[in-house]
Length: 156
Length: 184
Image 1 (cartoon, one colour):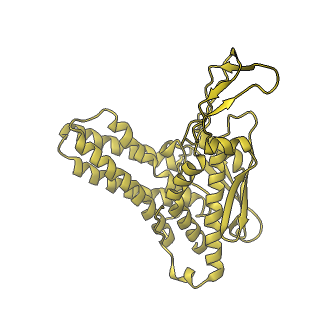
Image 2 (cartoon, one colour):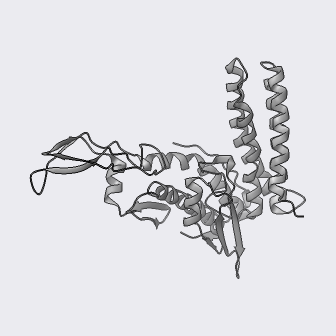
Image 3 (cartoon, rainbow over the protein chains, first blue to last red):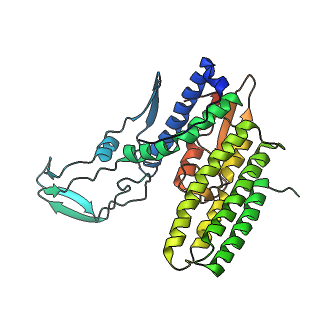
């Protein structure tokens, strides 16, 4: 859990409307910054999922419509892949991923161009990218600055 | 000829830090505490100067002073860690000059806070970016009709901006503040 020390002027504490604005602005600052970081992780994707912010009271939820994104974020266990149509799998390699675990980035990656045929493969699983955790950790550290900026904006 | 006040301040502070770090190289392993004090002093002066230059005022308001103190505290905690690394190293490292020079660019944070009139913007240039203090981005703020209505555009100042800055340019063009409240 991150710690932040904010300097709160007395005249702000006694003004509920201003305090409400400070808290809303802090939450909105953080939500907008986090959404950008999620968008960075798919910047090089061909089929980018979209991200949205849902505001509900004093909560901001940043979500995505991308099932593949959610799967990569959480990772997968080792599993068997068998051909669905026909009798063989066809895939290309060597594969190079666009993303790596715990990094807020998205690189070029590569599918590879050498074709391989198989009657089935044991997929080793996909390491969790943990984007949600990496982004949360980053912005938890910077929350104090955002809170202070919202306070200063309210009293300025 | 017009002078860009932020880059002028950064250039001057970069030279001061380079001079102090050259002196440290000569006296190393002695002189680390004195070097740290010297850099701290200059960072304090230039953080205040950057806020003044950004806001275009002659005196810091109490709010501005609070902001400057916070930003400075943040940088001084990094400097303290750097001081420990230097003390523990045993011999002077060539890369320390470049690392020390990065502190000069940290004054862009108070500068942009001054320039953006302390608006509730999601992040300042150099804040939460991969390029850290090398960030050359800026906020362009348009005041709109009405009370506390602004549109703020993230502008990139370099062709080779980091991924964070490129995405911010796409996503924050503009961010909207209406009635003093940042809009989602």
